[in-house]
Length: 110
Image 1 (cartoon, rainbow, N blue to C red):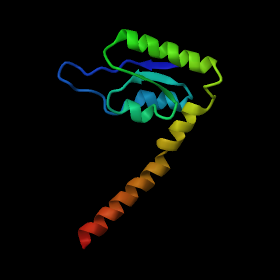
Image 2 (image 1 turned 180 degrees about the vertical axis):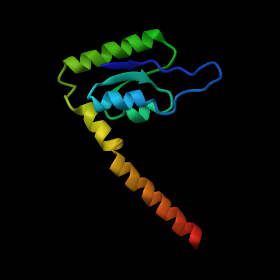
Image 3 (image 1 turned 60 degrees about the vertical axis):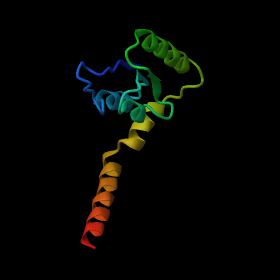
């Protein structure tokens, strides 16, 4: 399991795409993190547990909840890795971006 307690810094800045969560999923590690910016996108579909930022108790409860899921039949080995492969595959993402660029250039040419 991996835990990442994201919070905004004093000026409100925050990591929009915490790469360390992607790395955890690639290793098939379920993760607990906060509901800030990119974390919900990364930890969707059962690949982790999300909690409200700024609360040590919420993070502790999230870790306990995810631990219980891992020990139960609710968690399946490969869930986190599969999420990583499906959403963050370089070939798929490049193809999607290419489609957006091609569509944009066609629209602008008209």
